[in-house]
Image 1 (cartoon, one colour):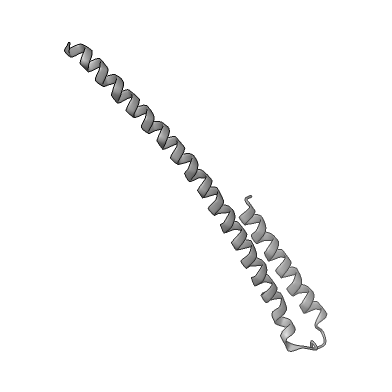
Image 2 (cartoon, one colour):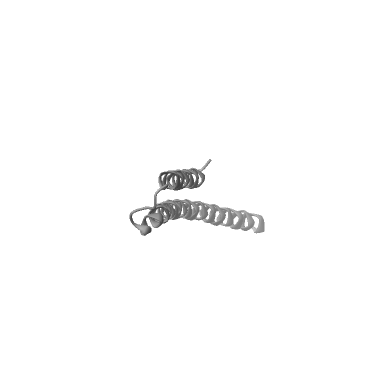
Length: 96
């Protein structure tokens, strides 16, 4: 499981447990009718923070991978240029 799956499962489990706790303890009407919005608001905040963290980590990973790709392409370019020079020398010797 990746961090995405683990975070989603933890958030879902915490939200479900919170809603269950609120429903089982609300045999009497709650003091404040807005109390029912607390869990969804907290879940949304946690979800937004986790989503931001996952995106930030993904962007850093992609940036690192792109840097490595640039190095690899530069190496391939150098190899091709070297091969081109050697082939030109060989052709010059064959023409002579």
